[in-house]
Amino acid sequence: MPSVYLAGVAAAIAFGKFVPLSASMRGELELSFTSFEWLVSIVMVVAATLGLPVGIWLRRHDAHRALIAGLCVMGAAGAVQALTTDVPLLYFERVVEGAGYLVVVVTGPLLLSRAVTDEAEAAWLALWSTFLPVGLAIASLGGALEGVVGWRTTVSLASVPAFVAVVGLLLFRRGDPVRGARVAGSMDAFSAELWLALAFALAASLGISLLAIVPALAESHDVQGVAVGLTTAVVALAGVPGSIVASALLKRGHRLARLVATGAVMPLAAAFVFWSRSWSVAAVATAVILFVDGVLLATMYAAVPLVARGRLERAYGALVQAGSLGALLGPPLFGVVVATAGWGPGVPLIAAFTAGAIGAFYVCRAHVAAARPGNGGQ
Image (tube, rainbow, N blue to C red; front, top):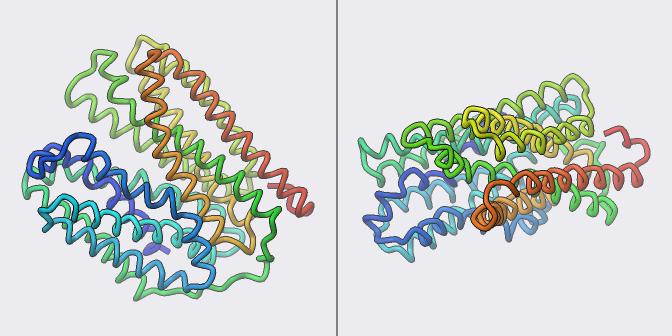
């Protein structure tokens, strides 16, 4: 299981490795800011368009082998990028890397679901949800490394975790039993999966969008230089303890629906983020929102086995696709609102995303309760 989690972290590193290298890469490759942003985000574009098809494809393929193959493709494409000087070829390599990324983030939670007991499943899946912020935090260290070894060596080193995960998966393979509790999927189950995916997309979009505007928010409070980067890094990790807390609570038997209800705190905290005149207050409130968002994302991952049962591959594919789509569309939406109307509308915008995420989760829960009355206690 540690190797599976490392695979997720490696995927997150691959996604975020270019971000701290912006100045050097744009200067050497003569990329505009927009072109560079597409180079970063094209990984999510692949996931946002192919998540569900890949999940369905995995129904007929060995998930363990698929994870190893995805890591190898991702790692190899990432390593080759360090040698590439042709920009169109670099984009192509990034698309290939995105395909590997997608396979990894769909198969990772699937293998965890199969490897652990029913009692431990929700807690492990909640912990899995921390792979993205942990990996992005590690990727952010590339900015410091680049000053010593250059951006190309930094990019090549970013592929190392993928190959380490491959070694771990080859040496410590565990059985992948499909437990008897899994039942055949149905259209009712698929409807529940789609509602869960919508809830996940809104929650993921909220967190990523808020984090994306933290630097500009800090500057509006006259915070400059290193303090902006340090605050952003600390706040970005706030979701990790949120997911860990969710994991611990789920292990103790707390219900998913109650954990999701904690999302009601986020609009209240948003008032302090966007309306406070103190940057310290705004930063702490931002961390609170991301902490609670971590609880929500972890809980939604943990809900997948209860919702999908016999269609885990499809459900994880839908979750990844929806979350990636939310991560792509959310930040531009928040940016347009802030640029057009200022910081004030940030509060109702976060309230709308929160209400949508919680509401979609409860609709999903209702679908599950209707289809399987005995499981209505989630």
